[in-house]
Length: 243
Image (cartoon, rainbow, N blue to C red; front, side, top):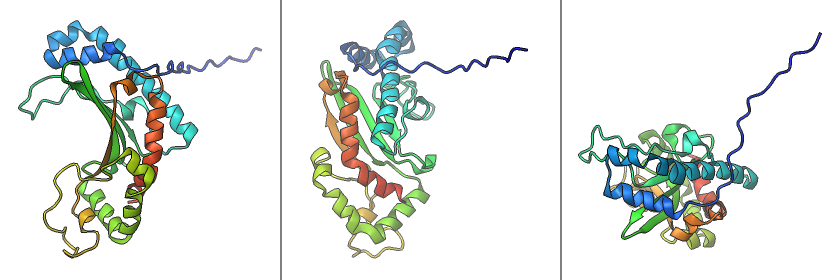
């Protein structure tokens, strides 16, 4: 009696990332000028070929790069890629599509309301130009997570100051860790106004940012650039993840 043969349906690996293209940028500029469902549907194949596919390849490549470099970040379609459709239910701007493209790499092991990680973003800017950056940290953490971050900073602010001033970190992120929103005017409840970490304790977000170029996005070496930037920020990321 022959044994049954089990065939595993293993998906083929994504092709390697070869860079975004001028067609990617052409599509985004076109969408910015014609942000309508009719225009998008007429150019859906451009979206799939020049934006969606290279984004999927980048995410797949970054997953391999993170594993190789032993970086504690997630890179997969479900967690890293956003839908291009905007949520317009509560917005005055009824443009149906995003023209700012974001790809995120969350720190592994954190809950959704404890988001901390890295972010790659790019968007059309000016006549045919592209504005791009990579950043990270904790953007608008939940109230519970923010309380834990402040508790951590309260007793470890000297460590945070040291990490924020490290040579490699400041080289890639010259502004260091900043509040991407509006910091509190007064100290949060439970902390003295003259606390030595007042600057940090008043923050509601803890982010850092580094500019990228169009050339970076076009390059097959973009994953290497991203890994280098993340390595420079790794200790800062891990500090906030401890909360």
